[in-house]
Length: 373
Image 1 (cartoon, rainbow, N blue to C red):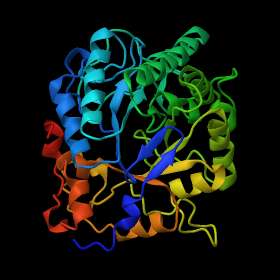
Image 2: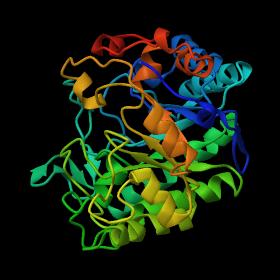
Image 3: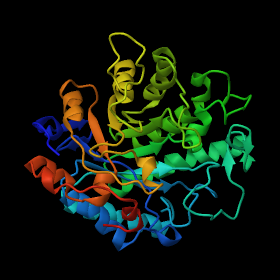
Image 4: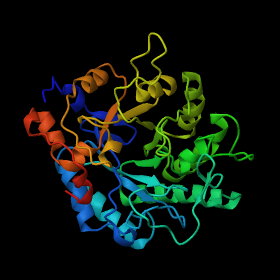
């Protein structure tokens, strides 16, 4: 693999209380190495190695809020309870000691079952309309009380993140999980204030989560929202097929208090609206930045030849050129770039890119998912 000048990747980034030494973010990746929901020394060492490897901002694996069925695998970490929060305190302290910055990705899986395990929680799962996908019931329809309690749980998790010393917090609002199930018309059939025929109406739950989190952390603590058009239930779904609908979706969320939109694509180089003349090159993060004025993170198969979902079928990926990415950063299409599998396999990926040691970059195989490197 050859790559051109990488200076654009290593410019500092500043937003509110957050200062980063480069534009590289470690993407959240579920690891399921937290027995009983408690992250341990192995988790701390895993994140500390990425900080030592010069990652600008580390976003944790999804860590779940304090709701009875907020996770869909048994070893997903909690972000609540004395033991789990003590584990996260060690993690952020170790990351800071290594010169890194970090935020938890706060998560509720909704009615989605994991395709990695047959485990099920010991109570019914919850979602906007009791659906996992179009016409596929699973679990309970959320009541007004459960919605209010979920919003409060997100706010408490954000407050705990700030109290523990994290630098940011991210809400997982993508990939067909709970927040995204409110966005998606196929899984949100509600007729109350949290439903409706328009994407803007169905975004009310997310907006209330963001507002509650903002109140909990104050004005200067950065909040990130991860979003996607595609769903793991259906890769072809597009919540917003036009820029106008995307604006209706995202502008209210930024107004509610989101500082950074983390825009998930399976392949970051693909144009979001290729049919629009003159703007055909902008990807999802580029359009989100253009429409809202917020900072954005782009993500999707960065530095590797194949996309993430192919890994679960055993497909390996090899190092790929970063030239297209660097060109997009140079023209300020988006602000930050999230790297997933490349960093999962190689804690020193960032250092190798910065020093031009690209021949030492490693590929990715599904076997890497089975251990914390």
